[in-house]
Amino acid sequence: MCDVAQVARLLERKWQLLRQVEEATQRMLDCPGEQLEELMWEREKLIKGLQKADAELEESCRDQEDGEQVLAAASGRWEEPPSGRLEEVGQAAQRLRTVLSRLRESESQAMLRLKQEQLEILEKIKAANQGGAAKAARFYSQSAGGSMGSRLGRA
Image 1 (cartoon, one colour):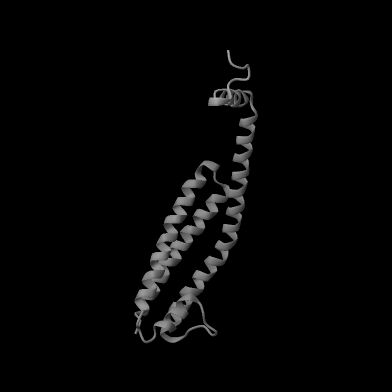
Image 2 (cartoon, rainbow, N blue to C red):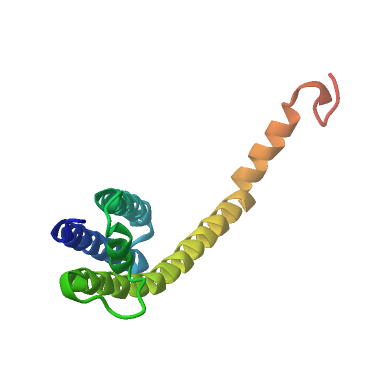
């Protein structure tokens, strides 16, 4: 038999991690561009914690006679809400699904923000490459390039 209390604790830890991912994602929407990379790394660390919790959940139910049933309740895959000793697991799974549905929307908005930042950086690069110093640098790098010689010919 799976330890339902341990499964519930793991689901609670997953819920807390998901909330932190959600908070980091929300901060990505309106933070200065310089903070985006830091927030992305923070999210990545939290996601690794979620993956670890998932692995622990799978391990705790592996080779248990009711393992499949408990994992189904923990993942929210049921036709009717679990009852009895799995009721707490089902409720925790429902809380996770609520956060996940909100997180999907936030992540799509964060991706749009990242793309916008990327476009702005590309525009800055293009503008920098159009300046007089950039043109002079290209001119001198072409004329110093080996076997072609200079534009004035050989002296």
